[in-house]
Length: 239
Image 1 (cartoon, rainbow, N blue to C red):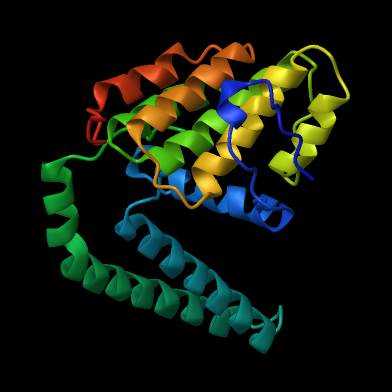
Image 2 (cartoon, rainbow, N blue to C red):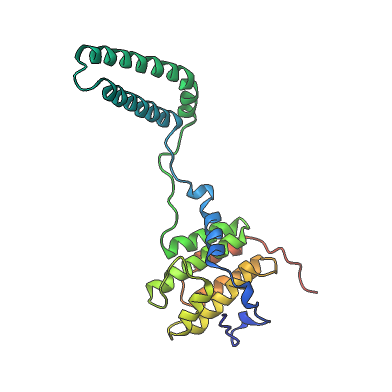
């Protein structure tokens, strides 16, 4: 169920039907698209380190298997096996080093970033992400980042209770029960659904209006609007 704010200019025009409301999975899908951006790539150990870990685990498993096979009183036989396992390990390590050393040295020469940026956690970080994506012309992901910052901002103020399983319609019903930011917050939620999941193509002008609606609901969206202003409008001028 949608809660239109008919008095707000952003809600003009017929609202989408109930079947058009985005689900939590749709919103989560756009969030995953944002987090798949290289800016939010997580750190992965280099291949040589993963390879060494695999070799070490394999040797440990082989040693445990031999000990179980021979029993605890294998004495002399166990010592021989230890030597053989150590030699085999050295051979394997030498072959792996010879095979992968050139790639490792090349990666060291090119240099690797010491740290990787983390995914946004706060409302301000999401607003910054919205600005970045809007500046690239990626308006739907920018709107979803703006929506995420809007939710966290209102959650901090006690206007709503954020949970990743909730849909925009759930938040609209929750906001309608309160008085703090009822009409302006509902107007933003309606506009976000039309912008991100409607049939009309997103434009920088429409995104700027959406960011203004978030600001009117009490969100510090100045950084989110900067990116939209930096992107030149692509709509033809009205004649």
